[in-house]
Length: 314
Image (cartoon, rainbow, N blue to C red; front, side, top):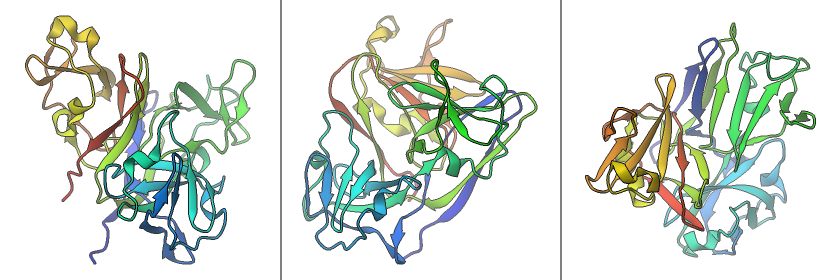
């Protein structure tokens, strides 16, 4: 079998500015040297069972090193779920409210692999993060988990989550593979963020929670430049019939060249369109640089949708 492509990705954050970033390289979990992968024999709404596995109990649900189940075939190819409990043959995973992982699984056919995630500590362990007594004087990281949270590293080198009732220790905060984040550097701080791992050979999928005001800040899946058109998200996002009706469309927000840009799919022209105060225009070929996350903002709907981006690396 061909060996997977491995490498690293670095991004520099200019002093006094912000950068959006996401992790697209993977690190495969292993126990006693064996890759943790196999075939799903059965599943429930939030568990999968591989009767041929022989894991050490609780090996895959460590708090210090979060691990994730990744489906590698079938309807859910490329989706990842955090593992919250593990026995010798069964993994319990975290799923969005109302979502049933068994809807993505064909017993005896769907394959999986277990990959490592990150925490704030592990991801920024080698980064020269500017510390401070509060978030006003320190570099900041913004994560989106149903709502935005702001983090900074205090002068004792401990990550804190800003809270109006008193900042709290955020050392073990989990960063999911493919999760987008914002890094805001203070003036005089210009850190470099580096991640390493292997390049996925699968399609990339993410679960979108529908509903008015629901947002997802996610990767586009693979460490290569892509265009809005190549993502194919119009199949799961609501479009609008012309510029006059764009308020009815789901939106994509992407941070490009130092500013946020807003896009929607125009069903009258079958084109991705950029919202602009001087007149909306065709944005089909807009380039999304490698490792740039996208913010998906929903205007309605209910339940969840699975958005899949085909693997552009062949």
